[in-house]
Length: 111
Image 1: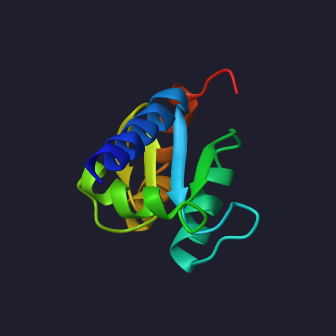
Image 2: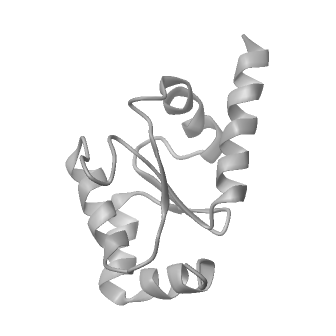
């Protein structure tokens, strides 16, 4: 079991490293499966930059492993430049203050 956990952790770390902005969410940006994921996607879309996402409902191994990796118990989880920003509440606060757009612009200037 620990081998598969290590593989999943490696996959998560690779996803976070490969994508300047990545959202672990329930559902997809086109079809969010919970209100928190939907609100976080809306905040990200307002930044007008591409962002990667992982549908944790379609990938139960990531859903089970990510909270231990991130030390964050809930979803969605937003990462910018390899760092956990937080969940919906934090993303919404950053969006309202204009900080989220600055962070995303710095993380993904070429997008």
